[in-house]
Length: 136
Image (cartoon, rainbow, N blue to C red; front, side, top):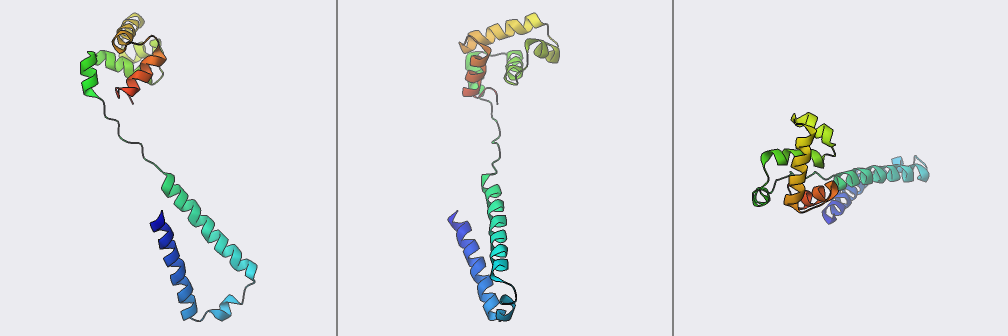
């Protein structure tokens, strides 16, 4: 942040010295003071918007699954696929349709997941899975 402020200060100082060096004094008096105030305000507003956009733009970190937790919990690949779909907010029927399973099989996988994660609801399962970095 300090580096950005110093950079803009140097740019503005260089512009002021350039104007003075080139003797644009007569040009400066050609427009009313309010016009220069508007120009400077516009430049600072545009610069502030640009810097705000650049400084606040964050990239999402790449998700890395915790394979040790998967192994220690004894989760099967099919249970992991069900858990991933569960974390996306899909219903049992949607999970069954996507994974080509019967709804009863999905219910069995969910019951196994709840038991292995030691939770009692879908919401708790998703929360614990995210805490353990099993799903994004």
